[in-house]
Amino acid sequence: MAGIKVVLIGAGSTVFTPGLLADLAASPVFDGAEVHLVDLEEDAATTMARLGRRIAAERGARLTVEAHVDRREALSEATLVATTIAVGGADGWRADLDIPLRYGIRQTVGDTVGPGGVLRAFRQVPELVRIGQDVADLAPDAWLVNYANPLTANVRAITGWAHPRTIGLCHGTMHTRSMLARVLGVPREEITAVFAGLNHLCWLLELRHGREDLCPRLRALVEEVAAKGDRDHPLGEPVSRDLLELFGLFPAPGDRHVAEFFGWYLRGGPDASGASSTSGTSSTSGTPTGALPWGLQPGLDATRSYIDEKSDLWDKLHGQASGAVPLDAVSEGQEAERLVAIAEALFTGRELVELAVNVPNAGAIANLPSEAVVEVPAVVGAAGVTPLAVGDLPPALAAVLTERSHQQELTVRAAIEGSRELAVQALALDPLVPSPQVAKALLRDAIAGHRPLLDSFTA
Image (cartoon, rainbow, N blue to C red; front, side, top):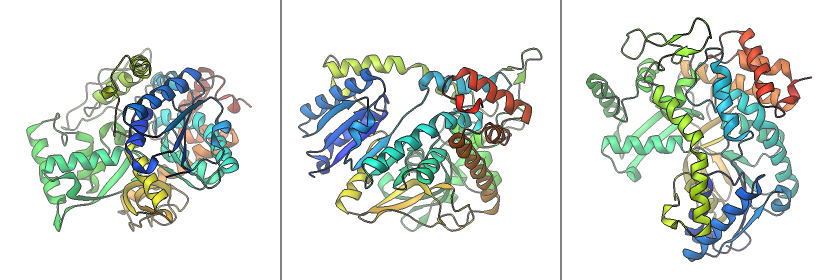
């Protein structure tokens, strides 16, 4: 379609950007489109642009791919903008794990909730609001799709303070649906799933194959896997099983994310079998010793490995961009395809029922705050993105998510106002932070460790 202009801000994303470029090249809707890749690191932008031009040439796609370091230069008359920024980069993410660890606070991911997610929001929110304001100024009719974490806080900030035509996307529920179809022996395209909640803590409200309710089969299989003690099975994650038993609904997208929303899984204590955890705390340093309880150590190990491997990914991408590495090594259809499918629906008017989008609630989940950003199904088409109402969540789940949404509201307002008082409150209200005194110390250390990115809190 003529006139489509895609702008990706944060083009140095080593997984998302190659996948997006491959998916755009494969889509007839984007034939003849302009793609503008923006990154503060000039090498990142130019490398990805060279990669994009090679993908387009070898796959016969008519895409124009350009690199920029100035986003305003790229944004004029954009029709679709995507953000994947990481203010502070890999070093900042690592610090979001390491600074809380000094105070005995252990996290598995540290990019959504927990003190790491709060600190990440303090860095991300101001810049994303500025990006949203630039989009509103230079391309007011464009849709802005945010992938950057913490997704809920970021989308709340952009929609509330900058550009209402914004949604957030995450592949977590999509991967969970695919896993459930696989373990239940149902073709993925034939399964119907309804998830609702907050990003990285969504609840499976419905799972069907035609007229068959698959939830009883799922429950029985979870119990069968648990009885065998098979933690390598996709349904062998003990936190998800425990939450299913406690609340009656299966959570997504897996233990390493959902565990951080609760105060009890990462603090030691009994593990999934009811036995005492061997994890402890050093009496001299305050640093936890031993593996994480509830089988969560592999989740943390995966996070640290992902952070550390980014330099290796860049070596491969430079090779692909130069022609030294075959293009079949380029990731395709992993995270970006939902963005392309959604954009196709927006641009052509052909309606798409999307599994999960992150949007202001406005009644989609009836017993959560109206201004909270929720993850729910939606219809996408000529009318835009229309969330589908799922009604009330069970009261206990509504209580958990309401409390979290209020904390995220504090986090967003602290970041936008540069308020040290609100920042301490947002940290202190996180279930993984043991006291206001620790919250103050976390903020102090983060200001010093992330300097100058959190200097707005020094006043």
